[in-house]
Image (tube, rainbow, N blue to C red):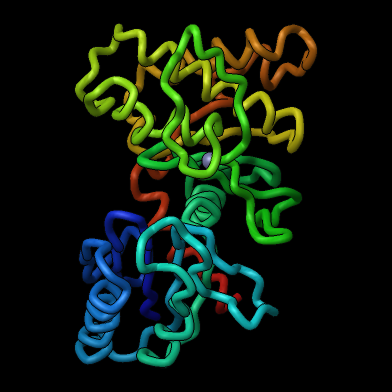
Length: 297
Ligand code: ZN
């Protein structure tokens, strides 16, 4: 059985694994995201050990936090670009992995990787147009249009769309250093913690924080629905593990759409239109495997 590798490269940790499939892992490691030298050094070391133990790895798939260059024709393909993460700007991630490990590398954003995992094994199977939005420390979005992962000028930055902000109802100025009132600045886990003085996970389910959160997320989703016409929306990430949010977001989306989009998939089946990832918190790593498998297809 061929051996594949996956790297879920996140802002707080890198999850690396090898196996014959994402549910058949022979080894997995979590490495804190510190400096590129330290973190990427440990990543390379892990895969070198696995190569020494098991032999050749067919390909490694990487889903990375951004912004990153995902254009295979670019001279900076696989680089971290001007990420706000200190020390990680202009780092040639894919080049290092290829050079040190001598393997083929599939590369995309963390959210596009998760979307690919959901398309292959999760809640987007058989669906050609969908969005995967992760609501965690930050907010990021990816997905497919016409059965292909969404790329373009760079890649989508769905977390930074601008959101109407009523400062009398919500005086919090927003947590994004680039935009005062983007979705990430108002509705990420980081924004919740800054606004309420404690992590979202410690706020009770009936706290007003959740109604506000649902409203902001719904504004974002309504804009994606009108611009991209997704057939399904998958909401993942740590904040969405608060399951009370799903019915609140669905209700807000219906309210904000008004009666304009009279589409049964939304008006009659909202519970199967806005859904959690079928792969749960494994979507990212599974997606990295899917990127590796795609290298052989
Ligand atoms: Zn922003």
